[in-house]
Image 1 (tube, each protein chain N blue to C red):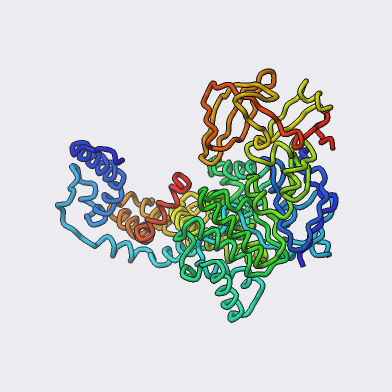
Image 2: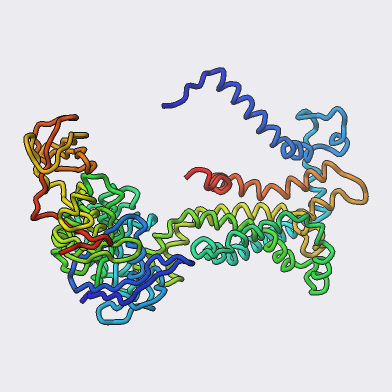
Length: 276
Length: 333
């Protein structure tokens, strides 16, 4: 039987939910609004919320000072590249751990996750030196490699949880029906896991797109993605809030749009396993 | 031809020997049922034959060919799983066609065989549906369809009816028996339900703790159980066991008497007792009688034998049908 919800209770819940939603979204909204102000209005106190002279000047300024498209392409290559490479490594790994576990499988999973608990700055110097010595500094290849390694534990964990939900008997049935290992993965496992693989893909593209620590430290001019593009506006000449906001808006817009269209998949990905 | 021979087959998980050592001969066309309580190793034995588990020792011969090290697909066997294990993303048609597709058959041949199987199993109208749009019984039939299209040497059934409700189970039991009569292919059927075993099998293999307790036809097991375990497992309600003085009178450590072989009377008999619980099934009544100096005995009487809780009754065993066992629990014949 449905629970009885009074109108008042509904109203309170709605107000609370909207308040929390707006609070979370506020920084993005504020960045978006600031990007249309002049520098003077951007730091005005008290701040103007909606009633200021809207201008698109910042966007032109940003585009004339730096090449947005170049950074955008770097971000696309680095985030999609690292996610795809990660999936290629993670699918067989997750398959093995989900369907042919050993005594140590749980330990291996924990160990992989433990690498995410270390502060990245702790290994910055050795990583930097390795990148410098192997000529990977400021290359897209280098960034793809480092982001793949960073996100691999998450990709494997997500796929592992998805694969665990697939009943082993179905794969055994495929084996009885004469499917080889590759056919079993292509015809049975992958089609059943597509929703899981899709949400893993989306979440990791977003993580890689927004990753700032390694991309800022290991790239300079050539391979710098959009994170570096934003960072360049909090530069030696001082802070330019309006331009910084314009750059930020331009940097997050593509991923925001991608996220908007795929939100159904994303929610499923983030809450997977909570309910069957 | 689907004869299957197990020689000395064993299976060990870690330090635990699930199946210490089993020898078994299954002749072509037989309907063999592995029956036993849960954890007796019956499913493991089936999976060893299927090739889904590797044997720890011994040899499996299928159709005269050594199959011990062959992968499941090369053994020429089909399996129907307890959960049906249908491919949820494929239509009924693709599910049934899958083994043929894997075998690389022509599309025309596949279409014909799928249509034939669907006709036999009354699935023709459902070929374009997905498994989730089917009822339990229909899913079960799709699983069977997927098994028969390949014309295997033998069918393996792993508790296929345990997810169905009681009425449907009786129907499907009959359908599988009819299918066996039509196809005349070897079938190995695993169940914990002795009624399924008795009604379907040509030959029953009773398993307990990874060992074969007895192999025989349903009636052999019913009339001549080799030991206490088989005597207690086959037959419903269970056989009554009596030890002590009444057993010693028959030169046995334990005697067993089936509920249907106890005669009841309100006036006189061998053992005296009072009625505990009476279970009325309509045609029959099962009486649980507290017999003086013996314990609780179950008796099966006609449905119109009028007694209620607390009534005194007399029980007389049919001496011809008494089962005698020695102190090791083995039958004395």
